[in-house]
Length: 477
Image 1: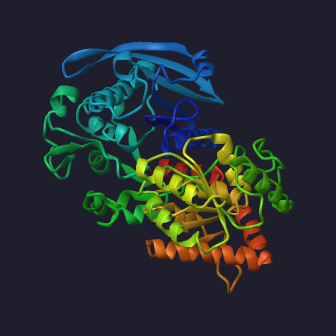
Image 2: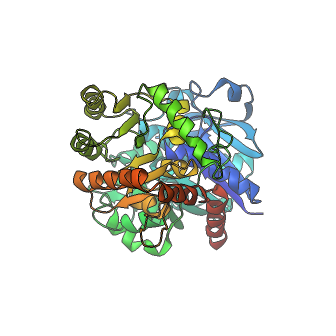
């Protein structure tokens, strides 16, 4: 049986800030079902762990690691979730915070975590075949296994796989971190190692030292090898592209099931998708929009420029005066973009609902009740929301990039094929034209719209498919 340790800085259902947290839960669960001996290691953010899981924790081990010459306590707590063992690395100094990231000492915090993960292996007598690391927080583990811990014979057969969920975040730190945290020399402080513009770049180290690199969609794996998307690491990725693979993320099809979703007023399936109209009226009522038969566009997003929200605001400002449609937005983010949606709400009463907050139940209502789901991201490594929207018969409107390109089949009027709408030129004008085109099909071609809904709902984004692809990479290693 293949043995895998999955290391990440966050993981649902304990704590998450984005897609990494979703993957750190769903992928190990799917791998376990596929017969892999998979275990997950995360930091123990004690203040943030929900009470129902804290009550199940057991103390498994304790030891110390050297951080810059100082012995630091490591506690290993454990619990089992659906057959998957979880190890939580405890240290109050580093993880007793009210948030996950964004602290002045993140280099020390996650440097400690990575060394604790490696040293934990011998303490627990669990030596994995593959140590699967994720994003910058754990990307230095392949470097440490080749450098600081290369002398440990038990570790020499471990293969490493690095998954890049978002190349934008890399873990840049002063070169002094090699002394003050890791206690290693500078033999790899060069372009073939982990040096970047005079600093240590953890993700670059992972790219150069991991045995295999994966990204969360095939298109993103190609895009990040270009200067436009490579975030200064495109050269390293091109040199290492022989070990680079793209595997599209999945979604939890049991959790996101319109036939069983208790957030919907009227559950429905592909066969009863016309009942979705009742959920649309319920959504309109919930968010304070008139219950009218007009195209309803939904947005559930972080309000950032990476998500294309600035372009969406410009497109809507041009469309709303002349187009009979409605928009519901749920999300938080940059203050100017939040204010932009509030301004549209005030300017176009009855057409725009702006809900600047996070509300999971309302998000489900938007997936279930909207006619279209808008994701105009500048770049999108994978994206999950467009897959959830299709599951609910809400046609996505996306910019052709990354996982959006890989998961949404653009409507082709000639063949009738498609699961949504997409556009290539990243401009407010082209986005607006795509919104108008989608609305026109909703109004004038209801049979075509229904066909697209059913084709979208027939897509299978279950995690079992991605798990098979990851298992293939483990076997390759």
